[in-house]
Amino acid sequence: MIRDITIGQYYPAKSLLHRLDPRVKLVSTLLYLISLFLFKSISGYLVATIFLVSIIRLSKVPLSYIVKGLKPIVMLLMITVLFNLFLTREGEVLVHVWIFTVTEGGLRTAVFMAIRLIYLIIGSSLMTFTTTPNELTDGLEELLKPLSKLRVPVHEVAMMMSIALRFIPILLEETDKIMKAQIARGADLESGNMIQRARNMIPILVPLFVSAFRRANDLAMAMEARCYHGGEGRTKMKPLHYRGRDYVTYVVVICYVVAVFVIGRYLPLHVWIF
Image 1 (cartoon, helix red, strand yellow):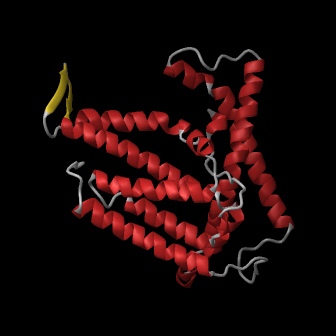
Image 2 (cartoon, rainbow, N blue to C red; image 1 turned 60 degrees about the horizontal axis):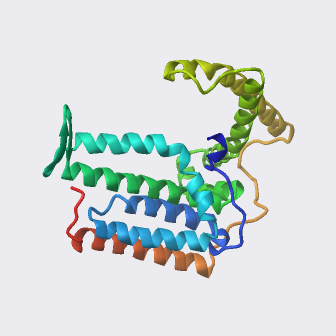
């Protein structure tokens, strides 16, 4: 399971998405996530599916790699589906067993919420797959630069987010090493109920936290040794500049948002979530 977590990881490839300005990818991802909550009908999901499939093909990231990143959220996905399935009481009753009732509206809501969550994770992951942490930091800093007039430490905020993204793969690798070391010493991490499994995780969490704090301290000392004092007066080796493809991408994403809103709300295929 630890090896299946791909969040924060960069997948190198030569694609159009990799060459886009990071500001474009950040804004486009935000608009895409918002668009998932703008429609109510199956026609909107069809438009979102076509758009997402097109983006995956343009990114040149293998579908198997993307699907592997969905495995850690299977439990969250199942909980979301079950809550919507049994707690939504709308439409005709399909199944009634003891205190559990499945209605037509609950079934539709559960299916569509599951699809929405999967699309949300895939869309967010594509941004990190096609953008290096340095590019994400620079793009976020440029987008938040107007807040610096309000004395918001924009550079520091972007730096913290970049460091957090960099630490995710490192901590996952460290967790995998610790688990293998504990198993080699005879630790049983699989058997028992949920409480016992939680207790079995203590020998993993303690050295993991110690390792994380040690890495954070080493990083802080390295930054101080290099006279790092924030973003004031600093220049960039690769300044960001918009190109023609970036403006075209903005237009395409805006057209998609408008299309999914209009088609999803005013041209339904007679199947509604609510």
